[in-house]
Structures are given as structure tokens and as C-alpha cells.
Length: 76
Image (cartoon, rainbow, N blue to C red; front, side, top):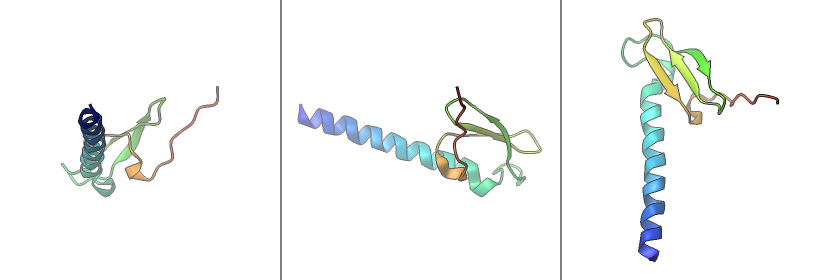
């Protein structure tokens, strides 16, 4: 039973690391990897995720803080 819990924890951590790496690669230090244009903030969702696009309408979705933006908190 303990090995199952350890396996699940390792899988969760591995998944988080993989997601972060994919976003970092897509973010490419603020430059679109497809055309070389700069990313422009396009939309922010209610949980703080950001959607960027370039001038050629390629999209990049960021949920981790790799773009150094602070999450937008809405007052309710």
C-alpha cells in the first residue's frame, strides 16, 4: 500500500514538472517559437491563467508563473 502512495506522489510531481517545462518551452522567454514575434497578453482567466498571442495569431497559454506576471485577483 505504501508503494502505491509513493507512486502516486511521484506521478503527480512528475506531471507538474512536465507541464512547467512544456510551458517554459512554449513561452520561449516571451518570443513566439514559430515566427519570432513577441508575445502579447491577450486574455486572463478567473484562476489567473494567461493567454498570449503574437502578431501572427499563434497562441500560448500559461498557468505557471514562468512569464513573471502576478496573478490577477478579482475583488468580489
